[in-house]
Length: 599
Image 1 (cartoon, rainbow, N blue to C red):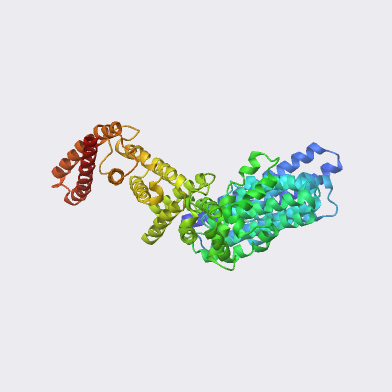
Image 2: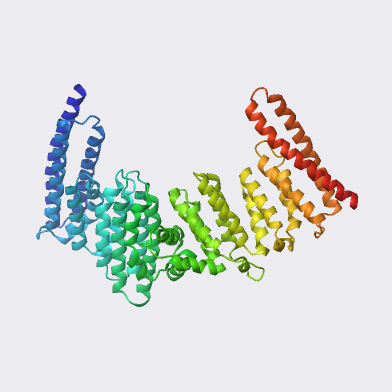
């Protein structure tokens, strides 16, 4: 009871203090008029600074009062209502002052540099406070030079990023920025180039807030997009084209931000993304252009001729956003009909390889719901299943696409390792195999070799080594010199570059797969291969890997036999794997010995 009485007393004191704030705000506002009439510019600057400090103090007291309310009751709720009413009186007083016909332009200009930043802090207190904050910012936008207001609002937005309620405090500022964009009369693209990265940073920060609703985030992002479109529609020739390109890139960025903000069901985002359709069409964006990366590249090439790296770095998620726009079309036909585009990707290997490189951005993202990755795997599987084997042959030059295909396969392996359910892992593994088969033979082994070399997972290395073996069994791959690199891959596992033997049981999967690959290469070669295993190479393998590994495996088996009494279930499981490795190892040793005898 004593704590509750103390809380109520504190709120009453706060309400009384707010009355004094109102009185002080009136004094300072009146003082600004007097200072201009007296010709004191320094006095005006000092008064505006003091007014901003006064409002900041009020904001801090309101926030402190809210955080101290551990136990709500009728007394504290009533006191909080009084507090809100008092803040409303302060904001209303400021708005009346700014709306007065007697106010001097020098005064309103001076106030515009400080007040938007601090006024926005009250926007989250209530709907009425938000309404007044927006009205105050709008008054500055109408009364001041828009070219002056744009940096003021951008600075205020940047400062709001550290606030505890970014969503509410940014609302009046973004609302004002929409109007400033339209009011700017010259150098529109240069002005937007400054503002858009700041807006995107604010939206991204908001998307990571735990209580942020996608609808609220999207409304803010869409308002900015519509304003940029209104600007572009008034311009002609080169500047209009550049603003339209910037809008297209902005739409991709906010699609990524919106998708990250969805924490529950994807269906909730469909009505929002649908609203982007007319804007995407206005920018000349197509689903095929988005999924192949041609549209993002085209827009970037148009605006990046003389732009600095800082501006371009703010557009780092455009490929993710472009890919997500295609996936949203797959989620709902209301967003876009992608059936014809899927058919085009199935029939055109170059466009298909480009799509692999774009979709990797979704698979590699750690911020999206798994449902996005599930839809992405479905799309990849549908695309690659429709690709006929005859399309992949030595006549098609894939070298330009190899890097992006490799990165896509790396992202696919991540899904295999971390997928939350067996069905998705199974589909993803099938996707992995089919994409590998879709790579033309001359580059296929190089991609597989890079995947094995750079994988940090023993299990995944084992899977990839199995894919090397499986692809060696195809007649087309037998015609290449990939056998010559088998020793290199096996050595990577059996004699790791960091030194020491492979560790058991941690590296059992990759050791088993490496020995299986080596055995297959030996048998394949003995059936009329190209003679890649010279006597020198065989002796190196025999003495450098196989015999030392036999000693290590035998020792590990003996050690686990001794430990079987302490942890029978675990030791038996390890012993089963080690016995399989030992059996395969002896087979490889016998094959090598036979080959050495024939030399």
